[in-house]
Length: 145
Image 1 (tube, rainbow, N blue to C red):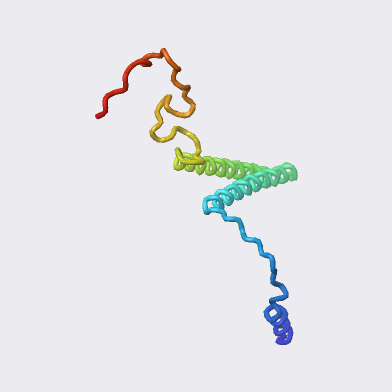
Image 2 (cartoon, rainbow, N blue to C red):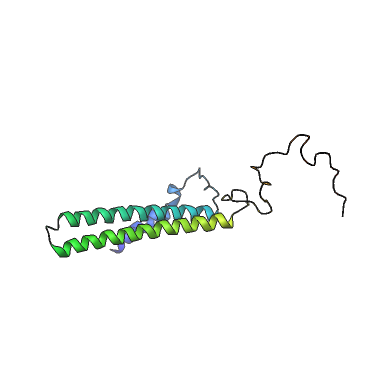
């Protein structure tokens, strides 16, 4: 046993330069929020997949129940819990998206909404004022305060 461990040690650590790479690529510079967003999307996708699996599992239980009331009740509970889990996952994902859009409102890459300080008609979607002859077109600017 000692000879095997010594052989593994020598192969792995003594000759480690044989496993080294000359051309190492750097990892992309990804922010913490991007990683958290990707992780949240992964968890949401897994929750959807698991809910689908539990619904299929409940269907198999229901089909193979053979009229047994206990098995039919078990299948109904499995479908109920799968749907509850699906609703919780969707509501959680929506809540996170809503909070994110609220917190990033008005920033570059924000989630929409009205930018701070922009009232009705003052945003980017407002039409430009008329070129001439509109109300107040010839009025002088207000005096400085």
